Length: 372
Image (cartoon, rainbow, N blue to C red; front, side, top):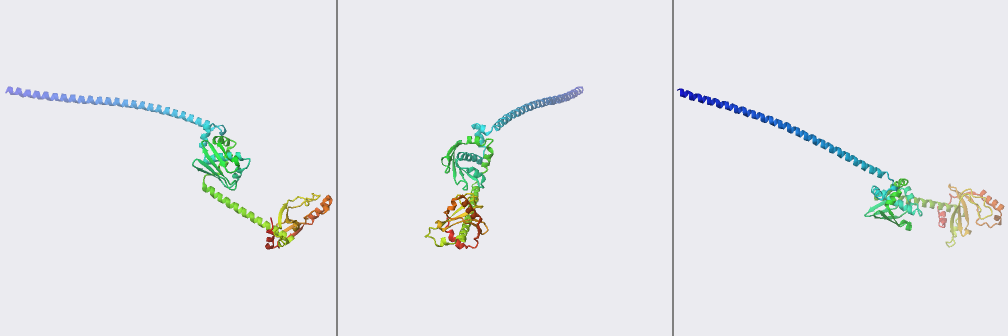
């Protein structure tokens, strides 16, 4: 019995020791977990500080890089600006070949064309003033660019020509059917730029450029309009001429009749027209030149002279003032200054008015047919 009790006690004591040992193990495990957590925390904090340190270092490096880049960019910009400013401060007439080439690249086709036209005008100025007429006209010069050649269509109202231009590097080989050898030459665009874009010339060059168009529709429309305007002006001038001729014929019929037409000597008779300005001597072949016509006069002379001569002023109201100037100054009195003056004065003082409104167009046309 005692032995059993001792055995049970030993078992109980063993169980107790086992339980206590488990608690100790658990306690140690807990302590180990605590220490591990603390260690992880420490390592985490250390890593965080390292990351922050690296980040800070990186930021400082980036900032330095940006500062350096900004400084470099500023310096580069300053150099570029300085270079550009230096180039822009050089006037065209002082430019090197490289600067002139760069400037030419910036020009429009019209401005490059203006250089060629100005050079052409300068070389042909002795024979024409074509460019000045172009600037006053209502029509553009047409610049056609095709392949490696440029062609200028010249306004028909001014010159009626076409200028051919071939490109050979910096040179332009210019040919024109007008102005002979002066219109055919080779020019340097660099030299032309230096000359015609110089401060004293650039305004005129730009004015010329504005008279150039590269649009064929614009040029053709203007050309047709100009042709129409010229045709209308020509028709108007012809109508005026025809009316003037009819009025002259009526003046002849009113004073001289139609005999010259009715008795046409086999077609050999005709009438010539001349004008004498106011202030001209009445009897220019006489000994006196002091008596003059007070107004412009028209002189109609028959051929042969036996057909007669009529000297008159057209009053513009259907009447004429007739001066009875003789066809010949055969009277010896015309050779004496005093008598010549007296007779010339009599011609002016006895000038008389004749109405030509009653002359029919039919009779007048007979005389028109004889007029030169």
